[in-house]
Image (cartoon, rainbow, N blue to C red):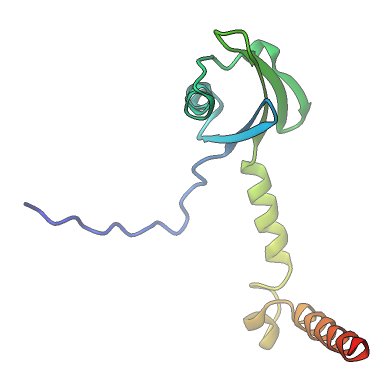
Length: 140
């Protein structure tokens, strides 16, 4: 028998599940994730079956674009129940968030600011703590 080897995670590995589908049925919410929009056609019915025990297909004809990376739609199960869904593409959002975080501290700046990130954040955190302690003293 060969022993299992530990695989090292790649540093610049692409985001695995760029697509998110949020399912709504009788006040309950369920999320499912997929690598692509075509992969979501397989994952969404599986999630519905696991959560509610219903069989359905993702109806792409009911799909309505709401924004650039956001769609709404519904599907009718074989038993006649309607399940509403929202589909998001979050790949761009992750890149945008990383870009914004990179602008605030991180690799920017020199010296202490480069090591610690945005120094203003720590100053504001210290000020908030001092204000909180003053309020607690006044309340006592």
